[in-house]
Amino acid sequence: MSGQPKPSLERTDSIESFEEVNTKIIKADDPESNGVLRVDGKVPPVLHVLKYIGWNNAVKECRQSVTPFKRIAPFKDQDGGNDVEIGEYGEGDDDKPVLDIIYKINKPGQDYRRRDRGNPNSKPISAAFDLNDYRYDDGGESDDESNDAATAAPKPVITMNIHSQYLIHALQAVISYYPRVNLQDCPVSIPAPYRLLYLHRAELASYRDNQPSSHSPEYAEITARHINVLLDFLTENMGPTLAKEEALHKLEHPSATFDLFWLLLKPGSIIYAKRYGLWTPYVISGVKAGSSNTFNQYKVNCWFLESNGVVLKRYMETFRVQPWTGEQVISSLPVIPEAFWIEDMVAQGGRTMKDKCIEEGRLYWELLKKPTYMDAQGLQDTCADVSSATPSASTVSTPHPQT
Image 1: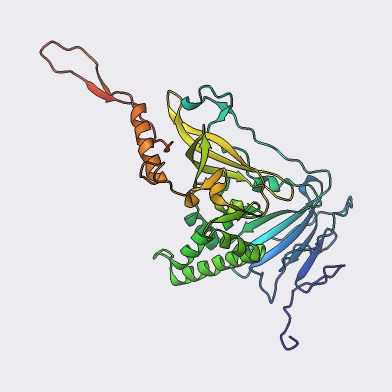
Image 2: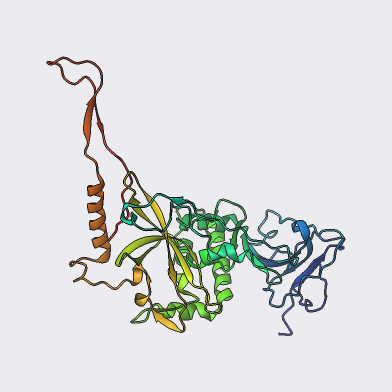
């Protein structure tokens, strides 16, 4: 619209395909390279930052924009010269973004990845004759979000940094279980494709509308506004694909596509998978998502509680889900989220699957208990009571229900 004024920048440079008004270019030889892009005097709530990284993690060039980078030029190998010094955000709301999206292009040949390997541990008693090694709740394999951060150039490594303390506190309030993610840092860093955030959108929206009474009106208003910034970004980032996938979940026979099956695999939630031919509940620890484009399978790392004959503890197990084309009925998959389990009251003895597992878990607990006993210390005569009697029993955590 010709009558609407365009946003203005405090500094604007222009090269090649980055002539857009809302883009700032910072180079190593730029004497004013410590600037931060501002629109009408304010740092935008979502700031996109493209960094070209040389040796020793030095920034050789930086570009800032209010819109996502769609076309990214390859890394230009220019040895020598000064490194770019990026200015720090201020503390005021107008001096820092609610969140920024960092795109890193690494110098070709300098990427590497480190793999964590689980340590074998003792076996649960039900696997006495199983040749597989079991890991003791070591978190399993890294999920694909951390692996995404090790991709080779020129494909960018994309990370979201959340700077808003209001938004960080909201995330701390709604995320109760998500291994390998530290919500105590500031900023909080979340690798693309931001699965942690997509899996907690409903909780964030609920928190936005039902904040604690201890929040002042001003604090509640800022928190709600910053939550909306994040939710709007997530919606725009995935586009209509997200709404289409969630519509599949609400069909008479709920279905899912392979690439977005991870939307149903929230860490901390319960799934059912077969163990020794029996449907068994597990708690999801982490997910390495698959891809229909590369034919990579899902790896769902879960844990369960079982005794090894001495103590009760967590053991890890990994389930693999092979790629499928189109849409698949969720209840037909080898890994079924609890919310999509189809009850078979006859096979379950007239109980829901959850009640059946709880009853069997309690029975398992009773069978594992050792008898209590009394011991006495010190001298005593035949007419005296026990001088010192102490009850003793094995104490362990309540086991996870098993079938």
